[in-house]
Length: 428
Image: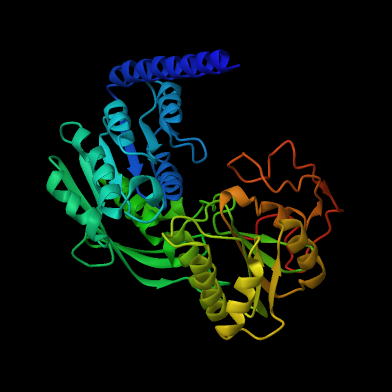
């Protein structure tokens, strides 16, 4: 009934206001705890996890759970902190104009980290300039004596320096920055590695992450960690142990000896382009891409499919397109130079999963991409066992691994040809 629905919405809004007010008061009381807020269009979760790993060496630390970076989760993270915690590391996300002002007022950070301005949420924010303007509002609420940690390689982030009243710390690729990197290498099967520099300090950093697109997140964590008292050596040891987040360029071994790069948690244009670059540079017996669609590109469907087809032809030997109009994408991939017979198309993830079960073999490297709403995680999970849920339309907006509807019945856990047990991440 409409009346009950309106009442539920009103009660939910009231509960959120009460939660926000309680967190605001609790934040005010935590006078000895240093609050760090990390924002940016990409890399927030990785930067948060890396910085929390660094700061845990210096004292008790609380961090955002998983990638829960919206208002209620920010409030809950603040309320979970105790007076004996030395640091709170918060991941701060936005998807509508006005969100950052409310978040920043609640957090009032001692340290604010700005990573990048890119395409995610372009459809709701309107333009990159408006995204930058919204992200910059975090800097207005830096506490007295606070520190802003900015990405000097991102022009829109660099321009935010004009709004900083506290201290500035820069990270990026140039020697004039406070923390910078060179010697970057990341071509699969290698994981991201680089040499980090800070003043007279230099240290080699080896990570468990796939692709050079993660470099700004690591440099941001190193820069913020140093600003809060860690040495570059301490910081590099800590970030070397951090693992990729689920389904964000996460390498996993399959029973047949192939390795799959799970990157289906987000399907925005920025992440998709970076993932194709990883595949293009990779060394493998066969490079295979499995993809549904891309979000926030500003293009209509056929334009997006042509773009993905061109990227696939330039990056992989085999492509598997999954969508209602996937036949168009397969034809476009052949026109772009992919060998006839290597561009496959299916309407549903279930059809693609069945094809891959028969097709994949040891030595293959598979990139799995798609929008969150497409639930392409099932393509991977179906390589490990039988999956019950193959809904085409699902209102849930998360990867399928822990979904109660999944109904995964694993096959026997035999070692894969890579030496990594079936279903276990190969990121170590």
